[in-house]
Amino acid sequence: MMERLPSGVAEALDFEKSNWTQGSVVNDSFYNAPQEALDSPPGALLKIERETDTTKYMIPLTAALSRFIYQSETLRGSKVPVSAYVLWPYSPRSQPDGYPVVAWAHGTSGMDANAAPSHHRNLWQHFLAPYQIALQGYVVVATDYAGLGVKKDASGHPIVHEYLASPSQANDVVHSVTAARAAFPELSANFVVIGHSQGGGAAWSVAQRAALISVPGYLGAVAVSPYTSLLEEETEVAKMLTPTICPGIASVFPEFSPRDLLTAEGEERLDTIHQTGAALGSASALLSRVDTLKPNWKENTHYRQYLALTSNGGKAIKGPLLISHGKSDPALGVEVVEKAIKKTANLFPFSQIEYISLSDVTHTSALPASQRLWMDWIGDRFAGREVESGCHSHELAGARPHRSQQSVPNWYLESATQPYHAPGP
Image (cartoon, rainbow, N blue to C red; front, top):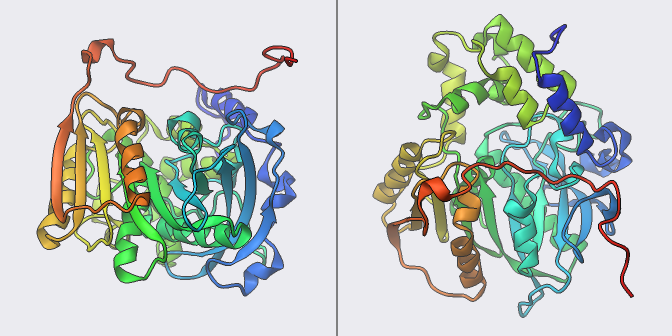
């Protein structure tokens, strides 16, 4: 760990910690893996907190929250306990067999256990997606991903977050829904997946998983600003985040060492991220404007094998897949996702793909920019509307000039220190 943090990083860490629900996850017994995690199969419900104390959170009025731990599986198929939450609308929509479920796969929050969205007062992406989905009457089931939330398994071994290993996160999504149904029988058997960025990659990978393994109740997936493959990316943001996949590579290839890919400073900064529990903001500050990667890092055999295992695109999918991506995305290049879409459509012409490119839209803003479209799309899946085979693409342009739009987030949710108003009669 670094002896002295770069300017601004300590302040960023303090801000991130202020959004934790009650200190570190090690101080919250909920995140302790139960002994049942040693033997239970993937999808098993291991622990349930049916009524979570919402005063610790900043969620929409009348919404309710539940937390649970369930069994998932890693990229290599090892069993792993994972935490998740259920965000309940006041009055859910209804299907013949219960409340319709939307499985939410979050964008990058961090690499440490404290980065779990269920541990954040605003559930990490708040009104960008999970709050809006719940406010439209869907029950949101949201995994934290393995390694985020539950820090150690039932034997006391640290759990690695296999960052950007989309099939691993797809496992987490699918098994979270199975476990949520076991906890709450009032939930419908049918579900739709939606994810952003890292979670967009997870959603796409659920579609690929469904082509190989039966996923009961799966109706389709929405991938917004999706991750496809670091090997194809040329953006500075993607290069900056590359060191964070080293623990995942080592979990799959034990002979791999981060020093095979990273400079000495890169190793030190990656260690600092894990020692401090840095979330996305402070981790980005630690990894930016420094040489963390060795000159030949892209030629590393284990790096390339890992990406081959975890990338999206060029693989069979099952069910409808809606993809939206901003044409001005500085994090994940639009040309990379379009290449992955084209490869999939060429190899599997009967795939059901709809692609929406968003003019003058960046990475995070793709969620609100395309919200009305993906919300209608989700409704169509539950309504049983058919989707044509093939790949159908179109571009969406804003109603107003780009210069007049709010292009980047310049606000955040924070706990009120005083009541907004006195309770009414």
